[in-house]
Amino acid sequence: INILSIENGEGKSFIAENLYDSFIQKGIKAKYISFHKDFSQDDSKYLLANSINDFYSNNDEQIIIIEHPAFKNAAIPVNITNSSSVNLFIGDANRVWKDTDQIFFERLLKQCNNNILIYLNKTSIEATEGFTGLLPPYNFFRKLIYKIIQMDFKTK
Image (cartoon, rainbow, N blue to C red):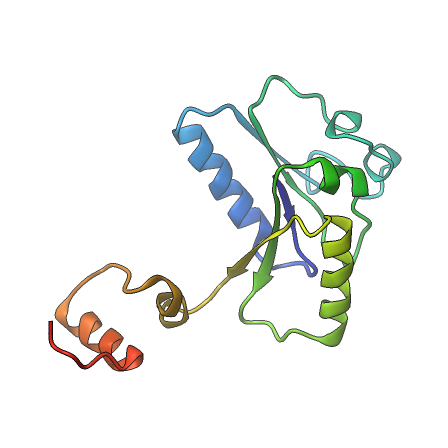
């Protein structure tokens, strides 16, 4: 699983760590590696990698989560994004999307052969509930506010 973003501070580390913890809790052998501590974004082994084995030796993990540097600041090996099962793009909902972000994102899409999932991070609970429906905690006041926001005034 590649964890990707355009800018620093989008929440890649937070999401990668939580994914890793979730896999470990389920008994799945996983490894989380990051450009912060496990490899350098400037190292030729990383930049010229044809596979993950070129900069990390696999110890029979079932899932490897790779946190890459921000796409705007560093090159990400094409062969790594192409050979991965999942490319997870993290975007910050509180940040304005600029024209340059669109250009970087389109380049990233091409690099991943359109094999990319998007995770919008740091959304408000109300915005998230617009897609998911009411989230816990459930109480009368939250249900009422949710119905008002959704303009759901029919009785049930």
